[in-house]
Image 1 (cartoon, helix red, strand yellow):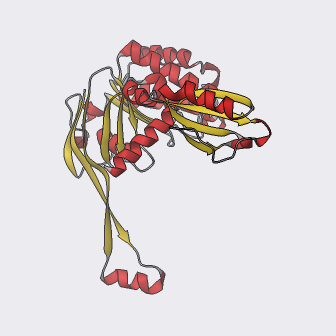
Image 2 (image 1 turned 90 degrees about the vertical axis):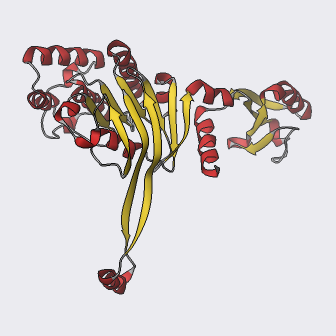
Length: 326
């Protein structure tokens, strides 16, 4: 469904010198710097896949989604979505995809959301009966019916995002690009949006490319992830393979009683650091967990001790650092 080959986007920006004379010099000689927002990115996604697209801020995720949506042109490389070249911006292509930007609105701010939905019906030329059936289904799935006639500006952030998803899906797109769809939402709203996307993907086999900084979104929705950093792809594969890397380590947290442990204390094969309220945190190999716990208990009394898996966020961050070094 999506084929990307050596996709590159270079932004050229003017470097203005500070002060008045810097502005005057810029009239005669300008200096520019180039930033590769996407650098030879290649991947392919099958129809019906729900793929996570990860990377730190500035990695090039949104730029890639905008190139796949036809909003900006690539500097080099090529992309095909359902057989279409996004850069040509053909009407037939615009009808088969949708783009949801978590920090941008597509609904009229001073009108009820339902008015924007009717406008979109006219834009896409949807038959009234088909439009009503789709709208009723999406409203029921998201549980947002009582808010349809409320002005968008008066909706909560979670309610607005649900309306944005409805607006994006009214024309039943075959491809859905989601850029931070749960940003700023509370835990309950995040869970509702994740559940909706999971159900919608399974029901209609819509191809979804999802970016998010919330690892809960990725771990609950995606089996496969693509990771980019500084515009370059550094990983493409199963999420379980990344999570499995964290299984080789465990985190031991314990709180010494009466501060009986020195803050720089660490057992063999373990790395320690001070946590909050006098808590000590150890990162140890999985096979050493039992031995290290025994060392801790033998060294002095503790009020509490817990063993945790390494968070997925930490594993991804380590992957970013490896990509930078490479």
